[in-house]
Length: 204
Image 1: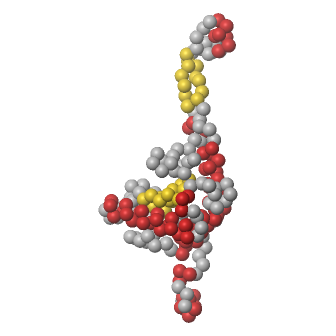
Image 2: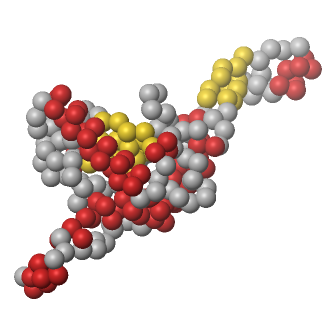
Image 3: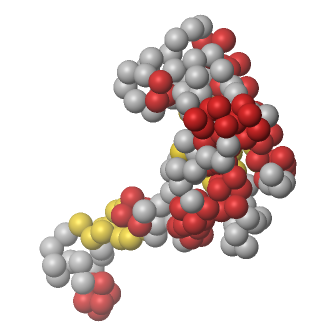
């Protein structure tokens, strides 16, 4: 009550009160730098698997005796931690949850959301990331029609993008997409946790 009265007395809007971010610029930087490093690693190499006895699979001995070696090719990219990207947006599947939650049917950013986004903007301004591009994905819960949720998810992603641009992130580094209720975060499609915005690094 005292804090509220003080705000009203000073004529400041509640939203103007400083909010603590739920993650730091360093968290953002480390997440995306790790993904960028992994994305630059060569794809999984192909290795030959010999089908036969130990002697038959000894290439040197087979060559000397005129024998033949039967091999199959196996790609071991799964074992190298290769990253997969969305075929449409080229975004790496491991996103960073911006923790921008929304009230039902709203695309308005809360003070905490803005604090988080300021940290995000600082994180991606790191020299190692300043040329990287990001997809900003909007998502909704399952309440309402598909068309309504699609539009709402686009509005939410757009609100995030516009705020990031307002604090200095170049617009050409951000691509905004909305997925409506098609990609829930939790199994219960109506859970408020599904109302969110995520950012993903675009695979170079």
